[in-house]
Length: 482
Image (cartoon, rainbow, N blue to C red; front, side, top):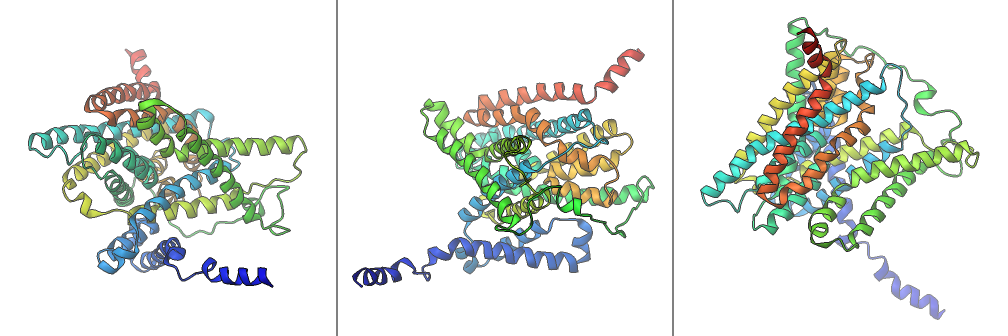
């Protein structure tokens, strides 16, 4: 009886569900869910938005931004919470993609996939060069005008993170650059700058992509394939042979979610372990922030590792059934990326961009033009039989996310009859390998203006090397003809 009374006395304190802290995080997700539902209705009912192919998640994020114009919602929609949600949604989404059993189909050769990855990495480099060509002179101009403490010279490198990688990486490196700038006495809001680039990138990919598509159709260079078709799904689209049942002692979706969280726990253990290592001044100021910013990369590597281990267990007959389900993992990654886009857009604070709107506009404009030009040239050279399908898939991805590339591709190749869709999915690993030097330079550049100028020189040399690989047939053919 005494023990019961003690428990009862403690119960109200232990289960005080009326405390705001119990609901704070869920309230943020309530807004994300509501924004996505309303955005979906708006996009379906407004023809202009439907034709523009603007992602529903971006519309949802803009809705929350509009709500934040009212003081009441400013106190409810928490910027920090939205940034944290964006960060974790990126990592979890990449883990889900890494766990999938991807197979290279015969229509996409290993060489073609590698070339596609090279185009992706090269576009990151070009975007970084374009960004620095704007922000370094702008910083010097700000400094000449006595405003050098309000703009960061290395901020142009956030262009490939916002355009090429999306809101998650724009947030990660925006946070790192804010800290680096603060150490140098510069009040730079890197998270807002990076997230604004990502949001503009979605608009560039959608609007420019649709306008160019319509121009090609009017010229008769692109046939209107339309959307009047029904996709026929079979059981193989939902599960592979010898998979665990959908519902038994545990639901199959529960297994997929647990696998994703297990891998992400390994990611956290790695980053936490590195954080507590004694790596000196460089490690503390540069390496450790980069390790935390690379949660998506560690998630990809650990995901591939766990997938390989599960496959080995199956081959050794230790595990009789297949636990990974591609269809459900696709749905998990899709949810994570939708949430990432909404939360990332909602986290933007326009007040922090008030004094640097001009560099932001110039960076995004030059980046859009350069991305369009390079991707168009590369796709025309690499994919002579499906250059436009290749272009729209790559341009959509390199200004937004892979899902945006798929949305644009579906408009010109609704049944995915060309290898463009397969190239887009399988190019991730070669793109990460070839783009890794760019990620290393992202941590090196913001330490000083000299480092940033050196980074610009290295990027320029790197794009020349990458271009030789991509356009090698054209270049060496000209030399032979001479």
